[in-house]
Length: 438
Image 1 (cartoon, rainbow, N blue to C red):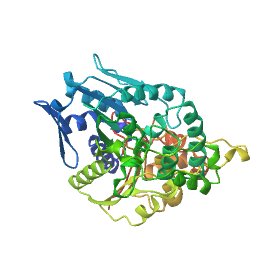
Image 2: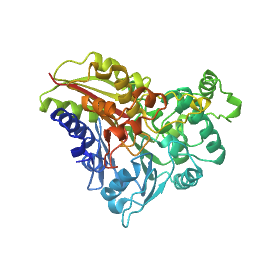
Image 3: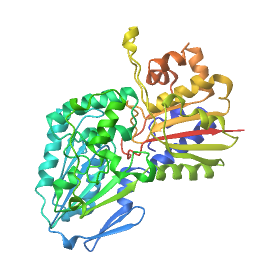
Image 4: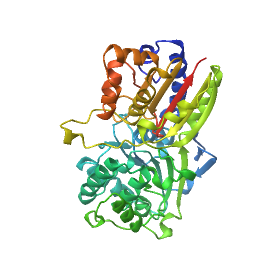
């Protein structure tokens, strides 16, 4: 069981159903399980199963290295290291947490997220040194995961500009595509920069998508360090101007456009939110509910995003969605108020409570979670139903006040509705579930 407080949250049978569906989703993105099931080495042939099966004959390479970038990449890389065993020559991971592994040839480094720090710069420089020393008969296998945009930071100049741009664009409500387009053009390693550094080695990039875009645009995941970048410096300038920011402040640069750097690069969509959503749909069916997938790339203001899903909900139906919402932060300090604690998922559930109150919550569950178990806090997200509202009323908690102050974590901490999971799942953006009994 990956949900660590499953028993405490199971106050009634409908909650149990909802949490079993969530657990099925988390099991589908369990890092060690997925990597072990999808990658195997036999007779020096490495087989990678994603949408199709890719095979690599390791006899064609003198050396093999692994680099992991982003949340969950350390555990994924360590798991791959065990599979490669003696064929692995070395590797580096840059993640938000360290994974201890005895006798591993992969060195694990920790960086900060959602904003980069000098810690990130030091670790990124180690990645750059490894990659730039690769030869034409070397193989580099990378795990590229969400969070890599913040974790990868190549210089002090990028650090300064990235922190400033990320803060201002996030507060203004820029979406992930806009944010990562700008971050690509602040960096020498993002936007295909890592592929250029690795040239002329062969690069196989296993990408775990946390970015809900059309046609699975892999260039947006972790700002696409191994993917040819179709955006330009002018695109980044335009985005900054849209949010009333001055482009000349940020020392923007063009990303690599010479396609020779990408001829020996294979980018594979290894995992996305389709896997957990389909697993949850299957579990819902097994438990006697009719699953309905609303969207794999839902977006919008977090506090309002669940409203259309709830309005169209029918009895014995489970509505599932995945994607990434935004939270527009208001300048509360002007009213002598401070920002609270919370994340997109908790805010989405609190927004549903505020919008519907007691009018609709009978026999209904609303739930939203971060796939990697950290919704900008130590909690993965929150669950709410009629019992949540009764507890809030008893404690005299005003949902509007907590929503205004973006303090969803403390609201659900008081009602006992925070969800916690073991930190061993991939980041494939957010997952939302709404179900109704007769």
